[in-house]
Length: 218
Image 1 (tube, helix red, strand yellow):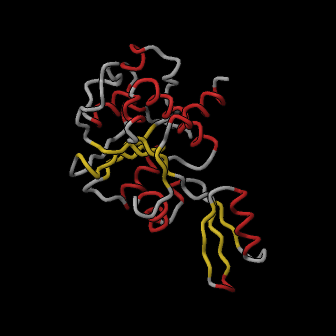
Image 2 (image 1 turned 90 degrees about the vertical axis):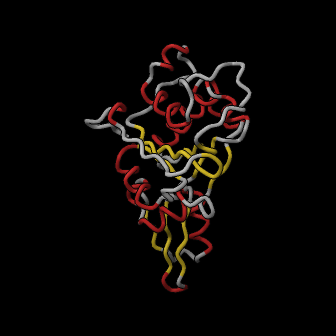
């Protein structure tokens, strides 16, 4: 992802109408993804903040640098925290504006890297959110497969998944590669990425952070 001429200081946070239980802060890559998600979100419960460029590796940064980072300041402010670094004595009892932080990034190398960096930030500086199950990862579809002969349209979430679905269709399927959230048709974006009832999402845990550390900082 290229931040182009924009910087994180220019990122526009779109708040939700309500705060608290059932509400979530969705982090996305760039303005194009933000516009697409805003068009299909539930404005009452879903807030959106776009990232401009890759985040600072907060695992290796000291507290002062993290506190001074614009993105992490914006996340803390959106959550209703006093700053981007949670006090070590915090027990998670502080009331946050959002029940969940949702990582919704493109299904490509950049998106995977950004997801990893955001997990490191939460693990290092806001660990209570991970411990309390408040950080979620959404998996956007990489491909849509269409077989008009059997009137079937399905989404695949990896090349391996795509190949398996194509074999199940007897090899007779047209395959479209999605280039990012901004390229998804609105209803598909809503169903597979934004609507909590139908999207593929999971709660991030310690094992995810351990996998990131093993990959990025072996």
